[in-house]
Amino acid sequence: MFLKQIIFTLLIIFLLPACSIKHPQTAEEFRQGVPTAFMGMSESYTVNRPYDKVVKTIKRKAPKCLNVRVTTTSQTTTSYQVIVTKYKPTVIAGKKKTELHIQQLHEQGVMNISEVPRGGYYLMVTDIVPAGKNKTKVTMYRPSMGIDTMVAAIKGWISGKNMGCPDLTKH
Amino acid sequence: MKYKSTFILLCLVSLLSACSGSGIKPYSSDLKHNIQVKTKTSTASYFSSIKARLDIYQVDKGCKVIYQGSVKLDKPVVNTGIPQARNNYLVFNFASSSFLGGSSSISYDTLLKTRKGYSYDIEVSYADNIYNVELFERGKKKSARRAIEIKELDNCR
Image (tube, rainbow over all chains, first blue to last red; front, side):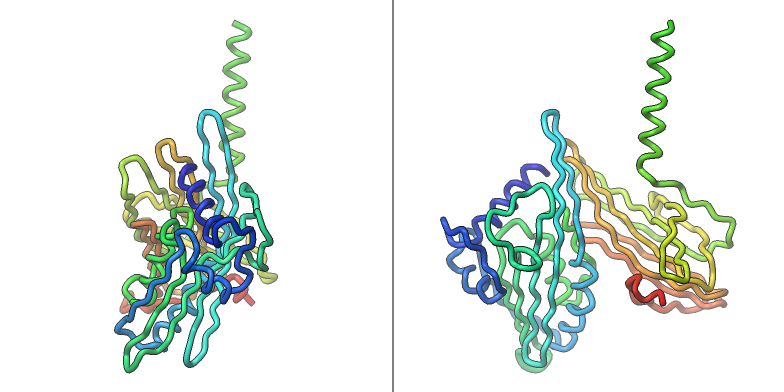
């Protein structure tokens, strides 16, 4: 768990362009920074589910499942570390496009090395748009690893096949 | 002999303070069982474990929560009773630990306004690091049940 925390933190640190000390301050900056970021990726796919239903699910699940504060305790024979992380989802829903922004703020146990946007560093941005009758296109801007649990949950909501919440203590 | 007694006493005090320090007490109720919790948990590794728990709070008129106790969800089906016709605040806690990996926990909460004569089924699951809590209300005749939306504590008024 301790090792995972370190890897996860490093991923976030390097998600911005290499050697830069400025993190994206907005969702748009995050989208634009992902293609050139270390271990950043964008992913697009289409689901056979109406846009309205996908958006309704995101609006219902994201605030409940992602607006959480997670405390992780790592203990070895020589160290003891407590990390407190607050996650903040923002859903901006419209008729032609819906955005899901997820930010994370380390409140304890991790040093924030650059200017922190209001609500925390951007961790993931998802754009959802209608793609014809009963189809919805999804584009995710995110780290290529380190948030697998969160990505799996959001994909479950979008597909309508799994309505569970991610255990954000697991990456 | 004197030192031995002192040592044992210190051990007992430490153990007792550790237990009381967690703030978790078993929930006990003489009320008719109106809650049935079905729990399924699984972990991907032999070296990790997950423990589910339900913390029960009463909610007063000012929306202040008062902790009543906790129910271990360590069996497939657990029954208990909570007051009828009033607001209750339920917090589902999933605590995981792994060998050499430390521990962590995450919670999921909902406000539940119980109705007189009704019973409630709660389905709790944790698998592949995804957890889910679903609530259903069952009528007086134990007939078909209906799903209940998860509600924030803010809805208590």
